[in-house]
Length: 108
Image (cartoon, rainbow, N blue to C red; front, top):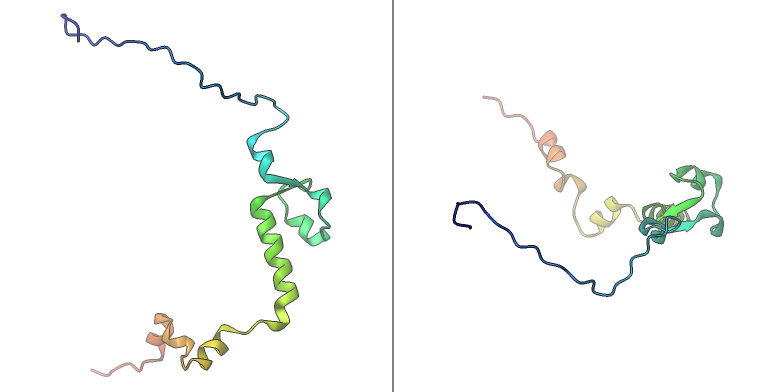
């Protein structure tokens, strides 16, 4: 503080750490995580799911891969209820709403 009660600040000059920043408008940070859709063999249904039909971003690629995997492994999938039964459980044991619905109402 100065003598008259006002706040004074000092200015500091900062030096560059030598990093160069890409200022090109053609390449942005978001483009690094996108893939041109013409590089991938997409079905028409998959192409309709894309926000931009020319590009596939990371989230969209995860969705497409999951859909393809589900199609190829659908025959070998085991229902969750069957897995629970093999271990001696029932699905109702894990769902409070179902557990509550199957208990009889007590008469008062």
